[in-house]
Amino acid sequence: MRKLSYFIAASIDGFIGAPDGKADFFMPFVTGDFLEYFRTECPDTLPTMARRAFGVDDVPNSEYDTIIQGRASYDLALDIKVTSPYAHLREYVASRSIKESPDAHVEIVSGDVVARIRELKQEDGLGIYLCGGANLAGQLMDEVDELVIKTYPVILGAGMPMFAAEFGIGEFALDSVRAFDNGVIVRKYRRKL
Ligand SMILES: NC(=O)c1ccc[n+]([C@@H]2O[C@H](COP(=O)([O-])OP(=O)(O)OC[C@H]3O[C@@H](n4cnc5c(N)ncnc54)[C@H](OP(=O)(O)O)[C@@H]3O)[C@@H](O)[C@H]2O)c1
Image (cartoon, rainbow, N blue to C red; front, side, top):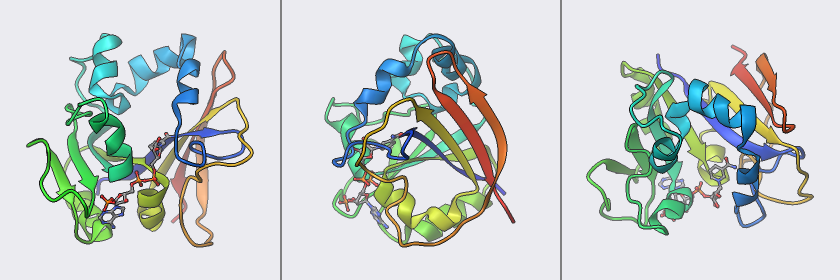
């Protein structure tokens, strides 16, 4: 079965963005050995534009071949006139307001998103990258098999949580911890069965 991985950038105090979701203040930390980590170990997770900029556009997928994001997260691409931001992956966007996909490569999921993810997990292939945001991740919280949390060395005090969900305890086992020169830490967890 394919795994659903929530691969997410967060502050030290656990927020994935400002209260309105804005998260561009994490970008200046994508430098040095942390940038090299993206280029060499997880190019699948980079948007197509970044893959081109980092010279990894031709690298075959190794970890993920599918992405799902909420419509508000997809809006960030639409705002810059990019309709297929992850062209190297099968792209799914959850939305009830988008009636027709702006791009043939992007499938809109308007029905039961949990059921769709369960179907996708049953298919053969690489992992499914859950991009966010908090709203979509909150609904998929019980479906997340792996967490990859990139913790940036900032605190925000308030902001968008990792999951917009009701209280509930989900237990995960720590797989690895990596620390980078600029203070970013990447932790990988898998769900305890
Ligand atoms: N730190 C990071 O790594 C990271 C990663 C990703 C995103 N973000 C941030 O997250 C922010 C957006 O997060 P968000 O929580 O506001 O929104 P979101 O989860 O990206 O999108 C929410 C939208 O998804 C659609 N949706 C959600 N559940 C659905 C369902 N069951 N069926 C159909 N459609 C569904 C709805 O779209 P409609 O209104 O069209 O129906 C809903 O308004 C962005 O500002 C971005 O910066 C941060």
